[in-house]
Length: 451
Image (cartoon, rainbow, N blue to C red; front, side):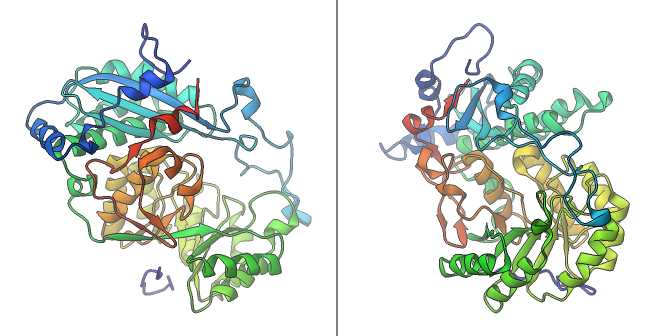
């Protein structure tokens, strides 16, 4: 069961390189799945013997997944509320909505990255790209691919620095740029793990735990509906649940009584985690926070303010007893450093598919030096996304819980895997296979490919 942190003051066309044309099936068949072969241990030993020699990168390719896999114009996947829309609150709370994110009209999208080496070892990564995945694909193929070709895939940190340096002096350290880097970085860790014949968590220093607790999202239009849904989830094995507060338009979304109802339902069983997705100003958050502070089994309050407002986050963290969680909106360790130096949060939730394994590990270690807990954000995505977060949690001392307890049920989840990720209600076991520890089902994956 998840327990809040002890603290003195808190309860705490299908992508390929230019000139090559691949069908979906031929793209997938080129993947190196030899380490999972049913013919015995010989392929695994052969792969492990290659770690002592350079693993030269021979190709970097991408794969757009969409659920459902409609082939309509790309601009039809982008939706927002009308220009000038307000929050729908009462009085001064009815202000311009600036915390709104772009939505994709009921579709799910992601971008897989496949990196091939001259030793026959291939790795998979993933870039968070729920919107405009072709933008991330362009960064990967036009900017990073020429830099990566011929390089030794084992030099993961050096390649991270080289990619970051391409735009560092141009001022690009976030957004599509770092998401493209994340896909490459995850694939490199997968390659080295497969070549060494060991799981990624072992490369990261070994695991602290065999299983990671997970939480599942709970909703409900009003307090009674939210309470009933929370009880049903707890009965299915999810005592720790996350719900929204002030996410979306309308006064109903700001009803803190919904949180009180879920907390009461989970009392003695688990915790409720609250996500506001930058829905408040500091003054608004302070007022609402007085109610949240009285909830003993409230695990954290996530993304309360606009991400640029570091100073307000520090003030809020000082005012509140409830632990403040932030990090989903940030893209590099330098942004997190500024959070930590201000003591602006108690828990961080960086996103591996937006940052990568290398940078997320750096952030988690830095957080531990400040006695800040670590819980990776894990949104809609496929196996490389979720597996990278699992391995990081396993190999990080300050990790506490992981998002997406039932994410494996979605179209991008275990349905497209031959070797599934080992989820069970309220937990995910750490995969022990080489690399990230999964194997795609080529036929199932091909049905979701667009481009």
